[in-house]
Image 1 (cartoon, rainbow, N blue to C red):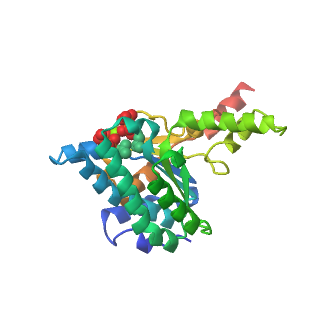
Image 2 (image 1 turned 135 degrees about the vertical axis):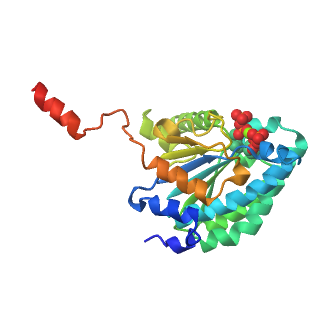
Image 3 (image 1 turned 45 degrees about the vertical axis):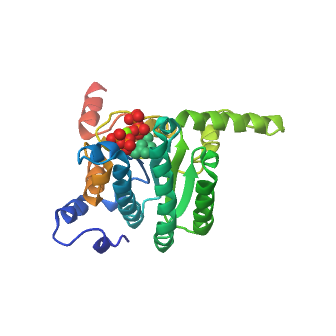
Length: 267
Ligand code: IPE
Ligand code: IPE
Ligand code: MG
C-alpha cells in the first residue's frame, strides 16, 4: 500500500493531482530525458553548469518520489555518448556533480531500498567516476525496491551494437543463441527489466536523442516545456495522470461496446 502522506503537502495542488492517480495502473518503468538545464541557466543569466547543479535537486526529488510511488524501474538519461562534444569544463562539472550526488545520496538510496544500475559504456568514464559508481552499485546490490538505472556515456545505437557483439562472442564459444526480440532484449543493458511504459522529456524537444531506442517501441511519450531544474513532484504526477488516460493498443484494436454492436450488425 502506497503511503501518500509523504508524497504531497496536505491541501496543496500537488495533492489534488496525486489523488487523481490510479495506483492500480501505474507505469512499471518510467524513463526520463532530463533536458533544458542549459536553457534554465541562460534564462537566469547564469553559466550553463549552474543549470546542471540546479538539476541535481530535481534528480533527488524524482528518484525519491518514484521509489515512494513503488515504481519498479526509473531510468534517467544523465550523459549521452554525444555529450562528449560539449566544452571540457561542462563535461568535467557534470562528472563531478555525479560523483558528489553518489556520495551524498547513497544513504537516501539505501533508506528507500533503491538498487542502482548503470547503463551505457560507463566503464570508459574517468577512473574516479567508475570507482564512485562501483561503490554505490555494491552498496545497493542487496536492495529490493525500485531499480534506478542511470544512463551514462549511453547511446541506444551503441547498446544495440554491444548486444550484437556479445551475441557473436557467445556464438564463438559454441552457445546456442537465437536471433529474436526476446533474445536481443536479454543482451541489452536493461536485461530482465520491463520496457518503459512512460517516457518523459523535459524542455519541449520532440526527439529521442539516441535514448533506449529498442526499449521504447511501445512507450507512451510525454513532453513538457518545463526545463529539468524546474521539474518537481507535481510535474511527475501530471505525467502519470496523462499516461493513465492513454489508450495503449499495442497494434491491436480497442473492443468497446460500439465495436461489438457494429460487429453484431455485420454478422
Ligand atoms: C540536459 O540539459 C543535461 C544533459 C544533457 C547532461 P542540457 O545541458 O542539454 O540543457 P539544454 O538543452 O542545453 O538547455
Ligand atoms: C539528451 O539531451 C541527453 C541527456 C539528457 C543526457 P541533449 O541535450 O544532449 O540532446 P540534444 O542534443 O538536444 O538532442
Ligand atoms: Mg539539451
